[in-house]
Length: 226
Image (cartoon, rainbow, N blue to C red):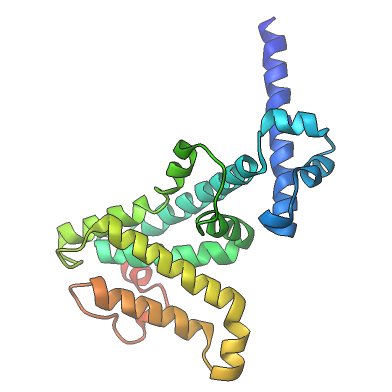
């Protein structure tokens, strides 16, 4: 009997994964607003009744995909700060890693960015609250920097973390959607925008001043730690 239960549970898990894969294809292609549960059901080759037995709403399904993307992001950020001792270096590494994540996983990045954009999703508050903690690692590193003296005292880690997260998302949206126009009409390359962001970050937080000349164009903290 237990084996039969195990098989049923495994089949249920497999079906859930198939739904998520189908939903990813639909959301990544159509976007949240244009995608429908009908689209997902057709892609997964399931009835709508079966689909709704796993996910009650489109919002819940979209949130689950955002969670998956966030898990990849958090792993990426954790790996990025390994080997860095100073808090300010960890913060810088997180910044580069976040932009790298957006480049490597553009679909997951867009899902996360859309979910955190402020659109009204019909979800349990506990679920939405989970995503409020996606920048916890950044707040931790800011606190680390305050303690080790590499980041100015008096800043509030959680508040600064939220501000930097919002700024980084704004930069990414600018680069994603206006990069070619900025290059064509203003002669501003995306690299200059990114480097300026890190210069401003350094000026506002670091007790050691701005990045040394030439460091802003690369992962300076990584090269120093190797």
